Amino acid sequence: MEPLTHDSFFNGNIVLNQPRSGYRFSIDAVILAHLAEPPSEGTVLDLGTGCGVVPIMLAYRNPGLRVIGVEIQPLLAAVAWENVAANAMSERVRILEKDMGRLVLADIGGPVDLVVSNPPYRKLNSGRINPHSQKAIARHEIKVDLKTVLATARSVLNLAGRFCVIYPAARTVDLLAALRAGGLEPKRLTMIHSTSASPARLVAVTAIKGGGPELEVDPPLYLYHADGTYTRAAQAMFSEQRVR
Image (cartoon, rainbow, N blue to C red):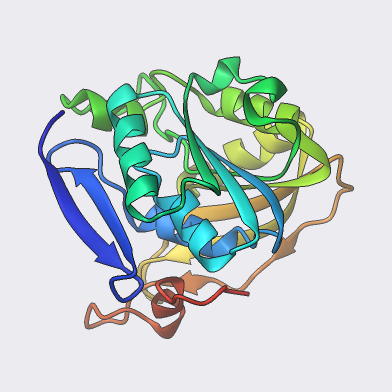
């Protein structure tokens, strides 16, 4: 295994190992954990969990929650397992090394209440593919595409279960169309900007399996002030408390 870095957050109460030169989680994952609004109890599935940061954050804030992270890359799955153990969460967080396109209910013990995902967002034939395979697979649709992510989410969700995804703002139309076509009705949308003066960089959408048509658009989420410091909203995402 390649060298790892050792980071911490939540005032040092959560530790996280990440590949030094491979795929590393970004603020996208923190935003996803912030906006997902999991139930206080139940089961959450994270598709494409990387080093396990989203399951660990969700489980830390919600002691009654059970979280399963699915990761296709063996080295990242191994790091995620190490992170779960290092944070004493093995009883509530499980990492499954598997191609999500082959996931069946028996793998996860039955339907879940919430699925979250920060999927690869670049089409295979668009942009320069990173020479580091971990980064390439995480960013480009090499091993999995949006259609597969949505089909997997729908297949494992309870009726009226929720799916929360974060995606590039430039592909919002593609995302909304694919969600509806995949039987996941978009219900809530948040545009995410670096600053109040910059265009939206990301979009977060929550959809409901079998939901009716009506979309609520939240106020924009701004991450940084003009001087580069975090906004109050961004600071809240790193809070130890359950965020509502």
